Structures are given as C-alpha cells and as structure tokens.
Length: 302
Image: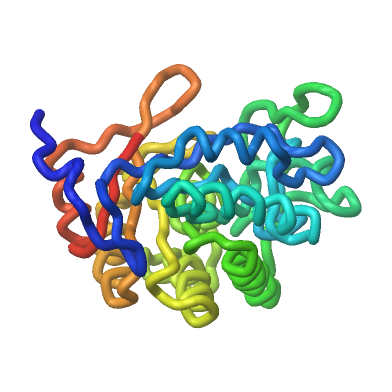
C-alpha cells in the first residue's frame, strides 16, 4: 500500500505540520509515584520522539482527580502536574515539534481506591466492567460504577474545560478528547454502557449529546483549532464491543456534527491484538464511509 502524502506538509488547526506521521498516545505510567506529575524521564521520553514540524499526542491525562484510572498516570489539575508538563512542552517546542494533551476521563474503567474519598467510579449507567484492574496492592475486580445524575454532567464538562485551559497554560498546543477505549465519552456513545432513559440515552443523537457538549465547551474555552477528538471505529477494549450497525449510525451522525465545529482534527483509531483486546473489526468500505463523514483533517491509527 502506497502512502504518497505521508511525508508531505499539512495544516492541522493552528499547526503547520511538516509531515503527517503523528505519534499516538501511549500509556507509560512513568510519573512521580507521589504527585503523579511528569518528571525528567518524561521530558526525555517526549524529547526522543519529537521531530521538527511533527505532532505528538500525549499519553492519557486525567482531567481531574475524579477521572483517574491508573496508578502513576498523569493529570493536569494540580500545580505539580502543570510544572511537570511545562518542562515537557518546552522541550518539545525547543526541538520544533507540537504537542497535544489527551484528556482522558476513565469513567467506569477505574476503582474506588484510585479516586478521592474512595468514591465509586462514574458512568452513564451502572453497568459493571468485567475483568481486573491494577490498584496499589495488585489486581482486583472492577466495581459497579455509579450512574451519573443528569445534574452532575455540567460539572464533568467543567472538569474538561478547566483541564483544557490548564493544558494551554502549561504550553500544550491543544487538547485531544479521548472518545475511545471504553472510557467515559465512549461509554455515553455505546449501547452496552449507556442505558439511560433521559435525553442522554436511547437514540444516537441523545447518546452523542454529552460528547458534543464537552467538545463545544472546550471549543468555547480554547478555540476550535486547539481541539481534536479521538474516536474508535467500532474497535475497542475495556469489555466494550459495539454492534457494527450502531457504530456506523454513530459516525453518520457524529461526522457532520464534528465537521461543523471545525476542529483541529478527528482521530479514528483501530486496534487489534487478541486476546488482550476484544474487538469488532469494521470492513474497509465502512471505514471509508467514516472517513468521508469527517471530511476535514482525519488521522488514522492503531
């Protein structure tokens, strides 16, 4: 397969990229064991992967303490986090690169021992994830999450907005909203995890409502050219496999809606690698449909 334009320049939001090879987010868990702030090893990690005029998307970053999902995964909501990230962004910019911060609210993919005051993880509905999660003292079963009340949703939107502003303040070129991997945003989109009967559940339009509210709030806060979103084209893990017909319906609706917002980019992610990942592979024609539905800047990756 030929990729004739892979090394040619392109525009993504405010960034004039010198090539189209984008480094996708990868969970490293190398942050300070106490503060979970980036440290010198993180600076080195991103520096080694920076190319002049190239774009890197950071590892998943919790927008607040309530969105945490992993031990030693970073956040962007404390002074220690911000000071750590300032060193990372400065180094990437020194070498001529660009860096977006991936904001990842884990939703049900978490555990009370990882959250403030041992609160339960939250999700659109109280649907427990199967499997085990790593906590401080080993692996334990996932817990049944607490279903979010409608009145709580604006606060979570505000958590994303605050995180987006913090990311820009410490030097990131923009943010990527994580709408895949079975985390909170995808939990609202997916039939398996969203069993709500209010205006945030049921139809595709209703299930996409919260995602678009987060997108719109972040756009209002930092500008559309500094906001990207990652969506997973029917391929995921975290005990979440979606029917292909519903995935296609999601993208038929979300594609034009995101296009209206003129984001920096939309990332369509596909993964495989059984048995760790449980997935429903979309056919190539359907992937092409999804790509055409988001006719602006679209990145594809695994």
